Length: 238
Image (cartoon, rainbow, N blue to C red; front, side, top):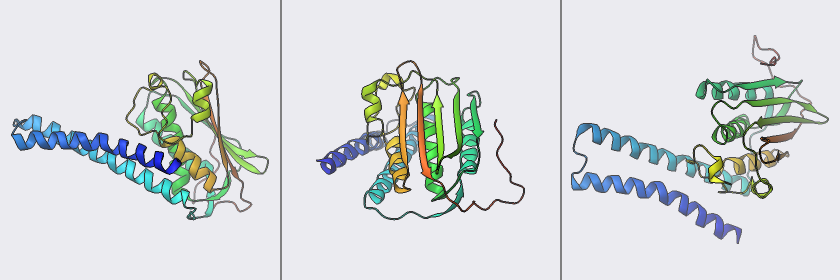
């Protein structure tokens, strides 16, 4: 059943970094890597694997919380401001990648600011991982009827239909050859789906092989505008 499969997949993902950490610990026990530079490199790898495990555990706990229907914080938010901050961070990670942002109007929603930021970060990270470093990404946010629409579109190799159908499935990575980096556990998009659904919204993906992928998040619009900080105004297209 679904729970059994989830536990099996989670155990597998945790076992990989744990095995690596145990391997380095065994080297220390045997006195290998005695040179200072080798010790430093091994410690960096142990720290990286431990951090990877920590992220995975946090993701699993979040999914478990959302599965149980535990309520998220709800407050008036300016989704455009959250998206702008996320795009700024993504540009800092990859300065050579063109990331265009267009705000098409009011984007007030009721939601959990931290989880909304995580949603945008995961969508941008998905585009980063699955496209060449110089491939552009287009981000738009604004009103769509009684909803707020966020889109993240890339110009990567696109997705075959069987991958589109499973894009939000937990631990599903799709075609490994499509990814430039396979360090993740395949939870990013499933977390997006869980957070969006917990906010009463929907997330979909449109894609064809060779034609990039476009992810669309629709959230109920809030009639109450989010409070603006002093000096803030509408985010212009960039």
